Image (cartoon, rainbow over all chains, first blue to last red; front, side):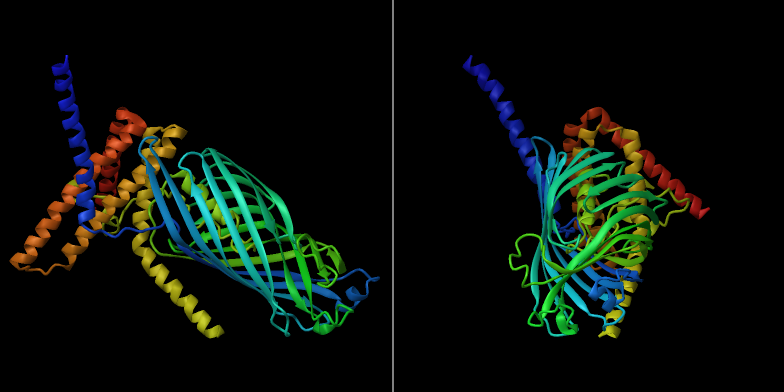
Length: 393
Length: 142
């Protein structure tokens, strides 16, 4: 009996050693060559965005400030970026899943010029650096955490900088590649005032095909990739923010308040075209109707308890619909690891895109998700050398 | 300041477009290859979420190996010395060895995810796609 056991154990032991050694050997030969591979899945992406809203006259004849300011328009320029700083990939050899953790550094610089008819335009600046943590469970779930502290300042006149924080937590569940739901919470200024929103998302359709994406409260969009170069979207999304505004023009009657808070929001509904010029450069153009236009001035002294929403305002106007224009250029840098057809990775990219950078609610247009082209009749051999071996000929 | 900023943006654009011309075809062909394989394999959702990360990892490693060898061969002088030739020879052998080892290792992982039948289907899909690329190159030459 014991001899039989011994007979059985020896081959098992030898096989185990053999298997283990081939594993080590497989790693060893590749590793011995010291080949450098890209560390990250995310590119470093820089986006320049210009946004303009036509001037509108205030129709409220009873309000003293409305009569004084006469009309309101908006010009905004923003520079945003994100760059991967840590990527950790872990393979679970028992469950055969690949988990990954991604930490990104995000940054934003916004210059906003609200244009009033009767006063010199103020140059409001918002700048911030944030961190983004995204975890891919390797199964169906993806976790997204974003912290975006920023500082706002009125550059036109001396004003005190204000520090604020926007943050988001989302869990995203890929039921299939054609259906995804998301749930979370976001603290944001995209509706002007500081507010906490539940995040609820639904997507129908594949991310690289026609899809309808409802991401409350950030956006609703119908995305149609016409070909690998052009993606059309019909969308609606809020845009806004809270900035400090110098009281140099004495808009607030208490002249001791050198600065007050200016908030704005609008709901933009329109058509956007994303054009991918090349692998690394894309641009977008969007236009449509800006409705629910709101502008409010809050006194800082009257809203000393700044933890919640600002409630005491001294000026508020709702304006009718107007036309908006939005254009931007997105530039990708660096090489990344391949994540083709990896739906969780596509979802990661989309989460990163849906949530914009720095609470600006600007979308970079998913520049990293590839849209599969049709096979070309003639292929440049030099460019695809790494995909084929000379033995293939 | 504004001028400097414009120069910076322009340089970025020129740099990026130059880099991407070489990259374009490769990415396109790879994307088409992946779609071709998807159609042939008919993976379930659960198989798909496990298969693609492993397959991507394998392909990344293979591409890196081939690129490394190709670059070393390019850099080598037309008439290499005995030592240089020996180094290139060793690199060539090591590359082939690593390719074979990676193939074995990753096919094992793939088999554990999608089973032997689909793993063999993957092999024939890859072969078929390679033939198609060859035909496309041949069409160009003709």
